[in-house]
Image (tube, rainbow, N blue to C red; front, side, top):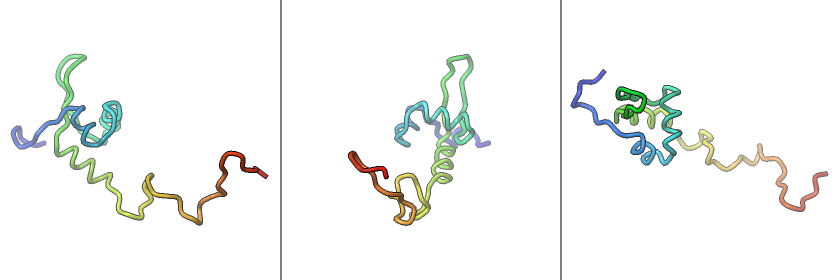
Length: 90
């Protein structure tokens, strides 16, 4: 664990903005253990994510080109027939 003063803490909203995802997604990442967080006392205690945890998450989930991320176009050898509106399914 780091000493206080050596780490900056971010809100769920700040992390969501940095990752360009919803607050709910950040909550899922925390629940899955992918992001470390601290929570204040009480049922509505505020949640804070250490900046080092966000850095570790980004590093662990960064893919290099050619690793087949979801944004990659399908490979020609894996693509099935292209069917659009009005195409015959024969």
